[in-house]
Image (cartoon, rainbow, N blue to C red; front, top):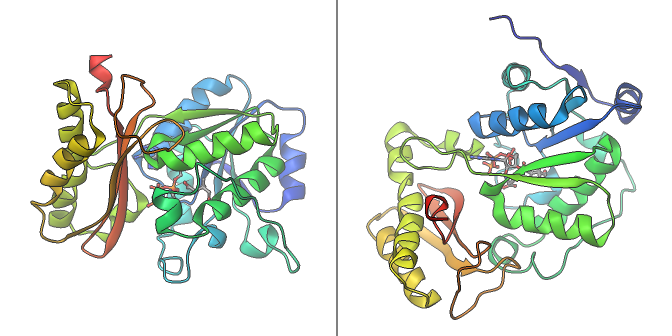
Amino acid sequence: MTVVLPQVLSSPETLRARLAGRRVTFVPTMGYLHEGHATLIRAAREAAGDGLVVVSVFVNPLQFGPNEDLSRYPRDLDRDLRVAGEAGADVVFHPDVDTMYPAGFSTRVTVDGVSEGLDGAARPGHFTGVATVVLKLLNLVRPDAALFGEKDWQQLAVIRRMVRDLNVGVEIRGVPTVRAASGLALSSRNSYLTGGQLERAAVLSRALRAVQAAFAVGERSTGALEAAGREVLAQEPDLSLDYLTVVDGDMRAREMVDNDPMNRVLVAARLFGVRLIDNMALIHPEAR
Ligand SMILES: Nc1ncnc2c1ncn2[C@@H]1O[C@H](COP(=O)(O)OP(=O)(O)OP(=O)(O)O)[C@@H](O)[C@H]1O
Ligand SMILES: CC(C)(CO)[C@@H](O)C(=O)[O-]
Ligand code: BAL
């Protein structure tokens, strides 16, 4: 099958000229696209009708801490163009860092509350970096709708809050997490792991399923639910746990949970030196 590669644009001016007057559905990414991204792009294609699907590929330095993996974050634009084209993208916006943050750039967007715990606490400044770049990308692309993965559940909550608070006027859609057969959530950072390590990293999703199973048999204390997940994680000696926490839709910890479908268990851990995150609803989707 011949794939029509998307048009690559790197300046705000050419992007605006290309998108003028068109309905636009947008998928922001940091590149190194995998099947999770392709699922987002296909969903965008379906939602877009005869409008344009725009994918951004930009590794945003503002959301990386000083000791994080910015310099080694995986990059492969040629492959990204093939994946994006196959999934139905029309345009890939690929700006360089100076275009996004020219000399004198001084503005930051900080979302209080939902940004503060979990990854916000573990990665100081991370969500300010995310909110700033996402608002900037939304202002450049001016989409009707933008799609984000539920894999980054707290990020999705931060973006929804920002869009609501600042009247950005874009529909934000969440897309369920795409997983490997082992249960491991697909992630660009999985490329840091070898085959055997990837199999072992599936312990994260097994821990989340153990929390779902405890909830399904009636456990409502978050302490006991979290203990069920941690017990599974304890079986992996090369894992260093950041958090495994049950939160409500506003990212708040509670002592007891009810059947609200927004209740979620989130996990972040370092495995073989790589920091991975995952999350699941407390109510197993098939039990709804
Ligand atoms: N497995 C997945 N299923 C669904 N959406 C995903 C998945 N992985 C990433 N996404 C979504 O794709 C978008 C771009 O994410 P990003 O480019 O950071 O990829 P990533 O795989 O999450 O990388 P990282 O390793 O940095 O976490 C985000 O909205 C993210 O939530
Ligand atoms: C939303 C995003 C593209 C902002 O850089 C990034 O955080 C991501 O890929 O999830
Ligand atoms: N997908 C989230 C991007 C990050 O970890 O910086």
